Image (tube, rainbow, N blue to C red; front, side, top):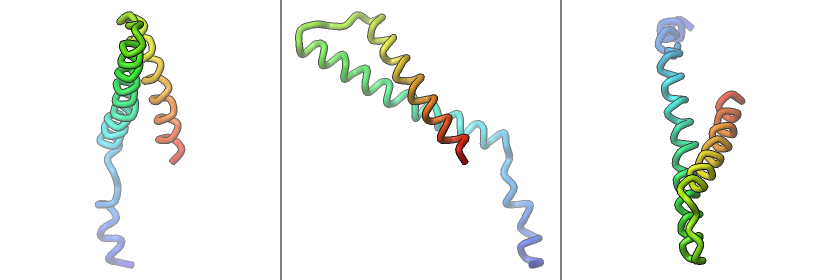
Length: 79
């Protein structure tokens, strides 16, 4: 019991670093799928002969990123 009491302060995490890591993780969870699916949408559009406008691609990418960020945030706060 005394050994655990000596190491207890080392187990306490700093909340500022935890928030930074969660934000970085949320960026990864949101941005990479958004970039991937935007590239897929642009590729499919180019393959069928209809190139989407940059505004349409940005809107689509923002929607995917927002959805992924909302799901990722819900999963982070579940713990």
